[in-house]
Length: 354
Image (cartoon, rainbow, N blue to C red; front, side, top):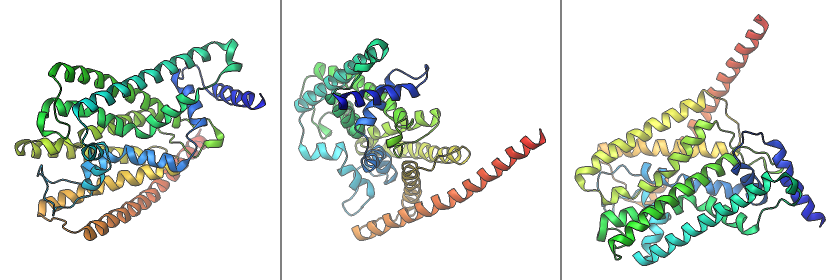
């Protein structure tokens, strides 16, 4: 009984930190975070999974839809561990895909029903002393949080099945009406999982649990929105494998140009705004810089016609990019610290001028 009362008090203490403008779903996710997302290493894995799509796209600038076996890229390795690679190895059929899609939709619906019940409990202030979170809700929420990129990539396969027919890794075997129903169902699921993911990130961005404040981002709202959108790029990572040669160059040029602009804007935004020095932010910065340099080097190799033909060379090439990423981040942090000092001095002088 004492333990139950302490757990309930923990939830109520979290509620006291929130203001009236906080979305109702945020306290629920903060409860789940305080119960389950305690391991910093697990959160690093979550971040890495969110970068899989970018790592795959930035790791191969080849204009060939079917790269030669002798043409080794880091994209091939990362693609083998994402939903596409796992689905290809498991030889999933159209019927199996239908069943899994319905299960995922049902689980998402169940989670939203549990959210609604928890929100109603929070709104009923007379029963706050009995406030609790079901273990099954915590379990599925954490699974969805960790495997979000795998889930939305898998759900997006229905579009490839519908438009690629027999060319995709999952062959189109069911009739058109069934597949169209799954298109609609999975579209709803992708939107639903994205909404849930945004609030997951929002809850991690607000470290109200002091015992677990290592796992935090502390980003601005605009940056959170951009991160929430860019993590969906994994849906496009296998598109290049099924485009005809006429469209691959256009697709690669547009996508990679947009990514270069994205990385530059993200860097400038971070450089000219206040950043919290946390391990999670540091890891995100390193991965972003690694993707940026991967894209630049792959573009250079494609321009000069250089092809990596050995796993040993690929290994040392990857290590080189990692070292470059750390060095660039270190130099950038020095410049950032100097800029923050200058801004602080300017603000102090303004105060004394007043």
